[in-house]
Length: 314
Image (cartoon, rainbow, N blue to C red; front, side):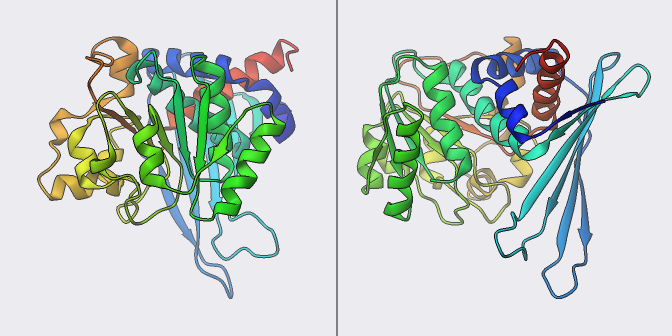
């Protein structure tokens, strides 16, 4: 069994290869059971959660991501840790053990960019990144790598100092980005708006949107979390990475309760990849991709790591 740490996983999961691996995975499909959640008692700290996310392709590969969420961690310990185990689906033999944090961060950003290849305008040049954490850095990098027309990147965060830090870090990766303080003005100016926050109050407002924009919502994964208001959702054509988002994400649940969103009008990314649902339908259409994470994405990324590592790639 191959062992792949964070550094090696980062080297093996190059942006363009990962986006194309995800495209192929969404076309082929996989069996993706419901994720499992288990509460873990932690003495003197809040309850932790163990998550298991399995997926498999018959006769090919099967895998499971094990993620631990320990919200009481202190002293620099991450609240979320993860590992991915990949197996041969023909005989059950283990193929690889991969750092789950790096795999998750990179497949999350790559999935959003994959959706943008179908939903964003081909002539989009201006990207706004809302959020300043680890995923935000990956998003800026993958968008820049895979959408070559992008030449203007701006960054907004609740803490302006964090936005400047992200812009500086991107500069060290040869990506020019400008921190901004006025979110409304930045949204209006962008062709693509990608959000990776833990916000519980809407950040992107429908009144700021204009024709032809693409909105990408990544951060909210519970009913209490929202990155866009109901007016923004009502203006857009909605695509999800998994239909589980319809029942889990506040960005969709609240507008549905308010009668502003018809769940039967929502498409998934697999339909776009397979060609059973159309990509962007007009230059004027406002599109929105909502992701909550799909075990198929983890399986695709892990398979790519295993194949490249087995072939001697780095």
